[in-house]
Length: 458
Image 1: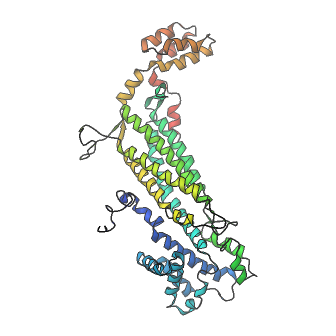
Image 2: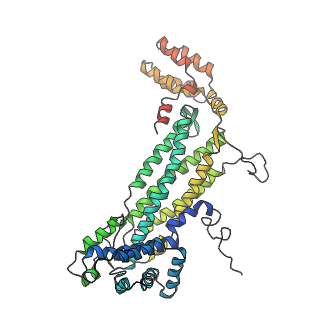
Image 3: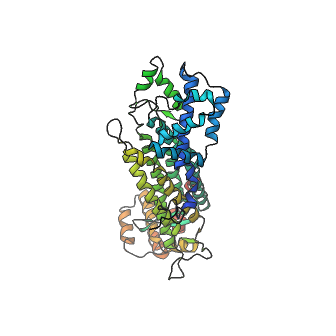
């Protein structure tokens, strides 16, 4: 069988195939190229850090020219350079060692640096480089991509909540008619939850370590027993913008990754919950979708305008959270001082991120295509006068009318109610005339409490 060349229509995963247009920006954070680039960053900064702060006699402070060479190597790092690293890996069969050899090869043209080439990857195990590289990738993704996308969704929902703050709508608890609300208040509930989850995502500290093969600075102290390697390592990790983890085995235990993805999964679950509600409101006719010219809703039923954006989002959130769940449960578990099960799993960090982005894109698209059908929401409210049983019996309780709840239960439960039947009951009540008059004026559409205030408070 002929092997197909990789493209958006031959890719094995829809993340890089069908949905490549939605996920392309993530390649700068999670691709093989991105991982190699971050490994290069860590190796170069470690060499500079050793020359600047370690106090190693054999590695004095680098000259301005030497620093420029190193940082230009990082700044100009290209896909072709990454391929060169992969070519070296084909011989070494070791991805991190390939980066070390790549750097050394680039130093050959610079005698002063080449003379100090053995301080590249000095006292490091591969995991010293890898854990910091992944932390940098996640930190960049979180701050530069994920949080802005969360904000995009939150803002669109917040704007919608405020625009529909006073749009009355019948609630449904257990699928049955319940006290009225407003559409804006229901959307505001989602916004409030999303903001809490976003804060948790933003608060996660990205951890890193550079303490050697089993976390004890064994090789460091063997070479330079007089140096304070714990402080040297801590300062280096913090200079990278990460939080130092002082106690590890060979690997940083990845607990922070579990915390991050658990928080993101909760954000996603809230979106999924919203998608199902919007799907239901579309089904009820409360929300209507704008037909898009040329689109087909069904191959046989021409009238269909399906809520595909919210269904797409729901499905992709499920896939994203399945990946996040595995990462959160697997990554913090490692046999003794290290096994390799985390290595292949870590390469899938971008998969959950990809499915999340597909879902967010679909939600934003879907929100831009729906509007409220106020005729339907008004008609539904006008057919549900039984919901006023709650305020009537509550006011009766205020004035010590006996068996208030039971009276309304007998009147309304299982019986069709309308304005006339409700008002006829109100007329019989032994409550002040002013309260009767207030209840007589009340309609289901007006019985929304402070929903409009809450909707605007997001």
